[in-house]
Length: 336
Image 1 (tube, rainbow, N blue to C red):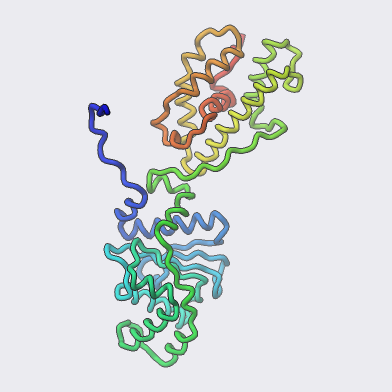
Image 2 (cartoon, rainbow, N blue to C red):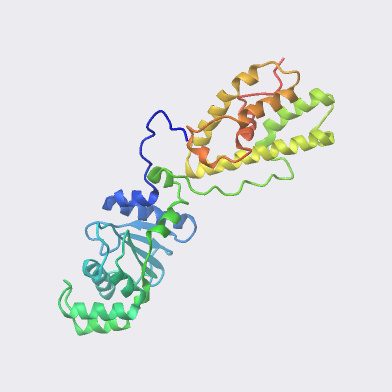
């Protein structure tokens, strides 16, 4: 096996590894971006990041109403510790949360999500068994381990409090949410999943007018000036349908870029325009052969410097040529 004559450097950290490199502020921002993504998916109406002094144990809030009522909002508690969360180092946060609800500082949330890199087995077991968690909270509070004064009234409140709302949000679930966010590339250098390309509509859409008009010139050069897109031969009708599929393949990449990495598709078009430039300028016997040759060149271009290269599909680079025609950057039939 041959070796490269140079050192390619160390492997880049994975998103999972980058989470451990974050500081507390980065972690809280990461949680906020996850909740904002859930808002964009219509899970919330509002998202508020409150982390800091006086936040009353609310780092990020996802609200389904303008003014949250009981059971209509989710509380995300962000903790980025070097050690695993345990009852001893997280119990104070739970006590603060229960105290604030007890004092009606805010209404009880639908969910109280513990967002931490590592949750230790003892805390995990308590959260998985709400009755045990309640028992532990009461016993610890009675011993005076929390800074909030214990009372009979508080004990009665804890007795009826629904500890089912307290849940763990694992970091892998948070990463899955964040992967759908337009911020994923900025934070992790990884592009999320690309959705299915748009279907080719039966009726030509307005965004197709320019490149279709240019293709019609190509077909007229062969079939005569009276030819229209609706009167093409079977062979050219099939060719036209293929070009439309290529266009919408590239359009799928365009939409992906717009949502995940704005500006990258436009840069890709510039690279394709440069890459096919020599073939465009080369004299061809006909516009049809020119289309064929240029698209062949486009299909084998190496565009690895563009971050979208990791999400390229078979027809994207060829379809990019039709987008360039749409922008009047290239043409198949030279003006006389």
